[in-house]
Amino acid sequence: MTRPPPPTFDERLEAIEQEAGRLAEVALSRLLAPVPSCPEWRVRDLLDHMSGVLGFWTAQVAAADPDERHEFDQGEDLEGEELVDDLLGRARDLTGALRDAGSSMPCWNWSGRDLDTGWVARRMSLETAVHRYDGELSGGETTEVAVPLSVDGLDERIYVHLASDVPDAPDAALGGSLCLACSDTDAAFVVEVAHGRLQVRNTAGPASAFVRAPASELFLFSWNRVPLDNLSVTGDRDVAGAWVSLPV
Image (cartoon, rainbow, N blue to C red; front, top):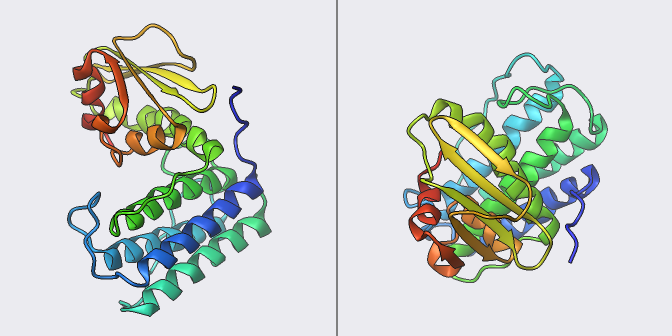
């Protein structure tokens, strides 16, 4: 097995469109169904959130301003099929704006690094995939996230989100080192979190705990969507279990 290359800019835009389309498809018949992975939400709330996120990032791309976050007015409340149509329209708006801008146009983001449209395309391809999975969970039948997108998502979860959030969460800790290893491709990460510091080795290796699963399941586990009990765990299970306590 070899590790897949990161998705290209165009592949990330295609993923946004495909994942939003799938979310719209599964949501249409169950807008009032609860979302198990987001206990406060029904599917309609998930669509409303996702539409807002897509619209927000479209506004940042349009502003082409790497130094400042720009506000976004989501507009009036929608109901029923209007929510589905709005989601699809906002996905098209974002991917259209990104295609027009290209992958290196200056653009603000909350991480303070990689201040360009490529960052936005990556972030939104991954967030849309996670929320598509949330929508599928409302009906009990889920589909996997593509392997290249999943590996890219694990990398982003660690090197972008944890790298940004851990220094502001000094109490966050795993209690040891945790190896996350994909069983269907050659990708693995050894992560340690303690005292506001994140340490990562971008490879398999010795660790206090070892979690091995297909890339899609590991990616979704990293966002607390797949429970640890569904995965193969060796070593100190408490270290693996502590992942859910890390900032999200």
